[in-house]
Amino acid sequence: MKRTNLTTIFLVFIAMLLTSVVNAKSVRVRVLDSDLSKLPFGGDTASALNWVDAKVKASFGPRLKAALDRSERAGVMKETEAKMTQVRKSLVEFKRQKTGLENSVLSGEFVHGAGESLLRYQEGNIDHYLLFSGGKLWKYIRALKAKGDFNMRVKKHSRDFGAPTGVKSNKQGITEATWAGDKLVLTIRNLRNIYGTDLLLVINKKMRTVAEQKRKDTAQDSGPAIDPELQGILED
Image (cartoon, rainbow, N blue to C red; front, side, top):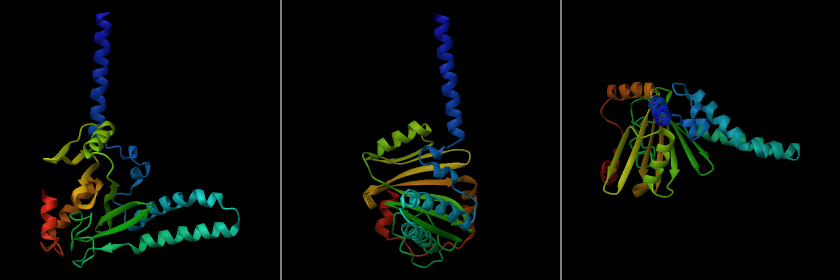
């Protein structure tokens, strides 16, 4: 009986060890949203727009299917096309001009003059942001509704991804948690004191290296300055 118990404990330990190794190598973002696993990191703007178009079509799919006649179907298709056009018009290139994003929830996520650009897709009350470096997708950002305690959000993500590989905190508790895999880095950030929201970031490690090198190679002038008071809050 003792040997059986020891064998069982040993097998459970091995299973836990293997699970932790898998988690360390892979951040399974599909757990949060199956579409995140399809993000075309390293792809150009056209590839990212194809990803967005697929999401737009899927969101209008039920209405299109339920349309009773040709006229109603045409109306839904027109709305679908309008949404896709809206996304294309949202493209912002950070060329040292004021964009209105410098003091937004995206503060600190982009750099002016380093060949970076951004697309925005509004899906209901969810904002999706796709950031490019040299025309290649390297970062995905989503604003999250601030529900419950942020520490509980970290705890929930820890059940999905294991213990965070990095944590930042202040007197109030955790302000940021990161899970780094071999290809992707997932971060959740508490911005409730500033914007009343949390932020989800998914970054491709290979493309991040390229983007960071471009930032180093560019001039130190990073464009319009962030409001000093806001910058102080962000750095706390």
